[in-house]
Length: 446
Image (cartoon, rainbow, N blue to C red; front, side):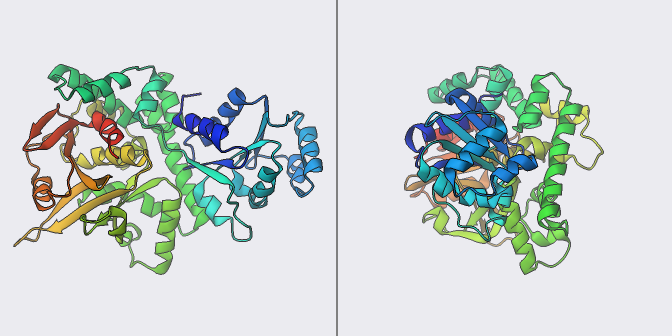
């Protein structure tokens, strides 16, 4: 079991919100929700019962036919599972809760009873789809679970440099070329493997990148199959798989019609909503007026999409071949990929911002007397100010868009950052940082 930040959030829930609320771990498939719930139960309760609604015997499922009589329900549950529950010392895990909506509805009464704690896990897309005929409980403390971020990845591989990276960032000094090259190579390993626990496990076990890539492809295939269960047309899967190619074109926004190869329909908008609910993707919305609160000036119709995991993005990026070969990974690790793959680093930044619970925004505006346009990759709220982020894969000499943005909105900007693989530097108040320092920039935002 890997150390996950969601375990800390569960401890906070147990200490401050239980028994008045059940914990709901929600996120994409295969990000580790079930494992996190069970690991927490083992370490923090005298006993626990895990009910996996995706793999449940008829005998156990029959127990849930009548939850209204709680004394009888708990007695039957303990009898069938052979596990004793202790008042205020036990937790019941409802795994894949979306498969049994009536049990989710009963959370209100189970929590009010107060005898035990409850942890639910589920895929958000299915949770939302399966609530048509039930009353959604308000007694849920939601905890989002993301793919493993860079700090969690370093924990998993036994690399204890993360706190040192934070100190390097706080010093404000240059790292030094040789040290920076080593730290960037470490980060590119994370970009290659990603944060899906199964892929990280394969890497920790010493599997080669061909096998790690196979693990990631299996997860992508699982997502595509899940989308077909929601919509048999297969168009949600096409929307998902078109993300790397649409980012590669460097257009202003994601186009549904480009993914589906047909005119956008009302049903396509619903499909997009399902894709967003799956948490397999990260939306980044264009804000037309950065002078106000970003969330209030965003365009719901103008957005970009990124994948929620950089490792899956790396695999999908080279999906044209039957398998992503060792050669591609060796080029990534040695920084010998083509320079026009900057959107690979953009996706890494998108994931880092999203894993902090922040919404993503960008800004485009027309260049005077030109058919081209300016674009700032990401805008992040910092109190009453905003901080623009520009992302480069390697060279950072050209940064016209963020320069013009800083001039145009100088009264709103707290700090402007350009993230790349290069060392710490500064030019006309534009702060240059290596990409592995971005989490520490976000930590300082208000």
